[in-house]
Image (cartoon, rainbow, N blue to C red):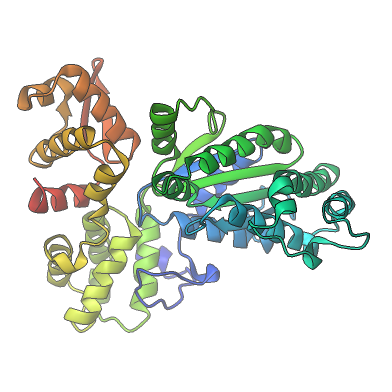
Amino acid sequence: MSQIRNMINYYPLNPTIGTLPETQIVGRDLVITQLLRLLQSQSISLEEMRRMGKTMILQKLAYLCNNDKLPSEFKKGRFKAKYFSFQGKQNLGQVIDELIRELESMKAWYNVDFSGTYDLLRKIINSPTVSYGDATFTVNLPEFKKSWKEIFFKVLEDIAQYQLENDTLLILIFDELPIMLWEWYKEGKHDEALELLDILRQKRQHLERKGIRFIYCGSIGIKVVLNTFRTEYGYTGEATNDMEEVSVGPFSFEETCFLCECYTLSGFNLIPAEKDNLWQLTHKLTNGLPYYTSKVFNILQTEFDKNITTENIHSAYQDIINNSNHHKAFNQLIQRLKIYYPIQKAEMMIKILSIMAKNDKYLSEQEIVKMTNLTEVEVSQNLYELYSDHYLMRKITDGQRSFQFKYEIFKQWWRINIA
């Protein structure tokens, strides 16, 4: 393994739990290839908890598409991608305004004929010469409020027509879409959230036939948002029923090794002969989650003078799961239950997770029923939702379902701090 790794072109990285330049984002090449294979024929919903690297994957995907750096199996120049972050958008006007402006700016990539869009704009604001770049649309402008959907669709139609004529695909990445919809719901703007979902649902299938693909991404599943809308408002739309749901998953061992090698080049010390064992230990303790690998190296840097040893890695791991200074990422495990689920359901889920954290084996539904005062139906429903929300993994033996924490590091933190 060491001989193979010595042939790879590593580059120095300072350990960070923040963002990285697109050119330095490590790993996920197989995930990106899988995403592109799916995107050739359909749109995708990418879901996972926070701190799993979703945004970096999407930013790397966009960079590779837009700079013709994709694997050779994909036709050169066929994919382009536009990344949008929806977190913090306050209303539908802001969302549509940004979408239209960013899409219109794609003239720098394509020789898109936007004459249809410009004709519509001229009619709306009664000017013979205006293009979108000359107009200032805000949520308070009456003409815009009455016509933004029509403008948005027309921009997409013009771009889609180009894709169809040139056999190219444009990927529109909507990051943190579920979080934005949830914030609107909490602020009493659920009508705008439902309207946006309906807009996307109405046009997405038509646009997909003309070469546009969508990625909806969020640290809470879009399913959680839709279930709330169905329960409280009778929403019946199927906004994502024909989108392939994809989970990020951890780094492979090889990807963890690559990350560790890059961090080491920024001035860390170790005995070369111990390198394989050190990387195996790091991968095992962090479960291949790059965020926690970075946390380990952060602690090695600040507390152990950049000395990488077996003892120091173990100490760094114990610090991560025991020291409250490092618990910001873990706290999401309990906060997301209390925020996105009804109180009674959240309490049942917390009880089930606490029981599972105290056991070192898969537990069947029947075993959990015996350990709680919950009914079989309650246990079954809550286990399925925890499994769908990426807390648990499941196996089926002789027709019987059993469950365990998806990541051991989450289980250990829960056992020490919650259970």
